[in-house]
Length: 235
Ligand SMILES: [Zn+2]
View 1 (spheres, protein in one colour):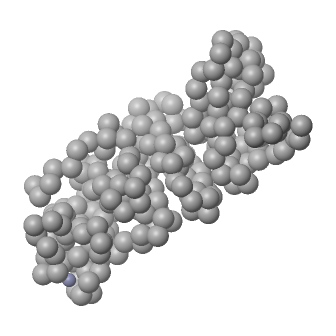
View 2 (cartoon, rainbow, N blue to C red):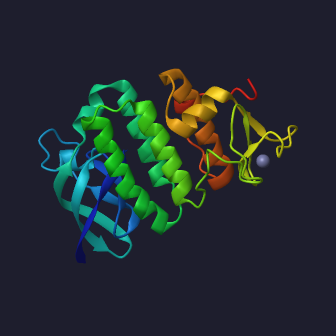
């Protein structure tokens, strides 16, 4: 049995047997791993805090063949304000869910660092969850190879004004370059928000559902539809 140390965050914690939990971590050293946290459901368990979602810190694990058991944890941050506000909490859960499903190790590692930074913004800088969501989804697209240009048509280079279209082969394009039968229209308010971050919370929410759609089409990660609602095509 080896003892190892990893730095990461709890993205999921599920019940296992009577008193144990299976904890999914995204770590800088090993990417995504699952470890067994023994006895943490008992009321006075020493490591109760360690298995909670959003717990970020250094985890000490015992490794036996391919399985890990949690032996200790030094917490860096619990991001506790996140549990005080439902919108913040949903935003945090969406980030943990998507972070856990990024397939490439390198982009997951970069996204882990970015996600920690965004959780801090959410909890301590009082930035509205919708805007943190926008930044998170844009960064996810970028780290997975889709650094979308929201200002210029990716085909002809013209400024995108009023209406743009999303094409899953070209990204955001102008109406002259679009195939209006197959490409998804992105209206003025959404386009403006994606370019400048200006717009109401409602516009931000709709825009985020578009970004979630881009992520699904381009990267193949489907975000939780409960969080993003459905996209109103061409409204
Ligand atoms: Zn164009």
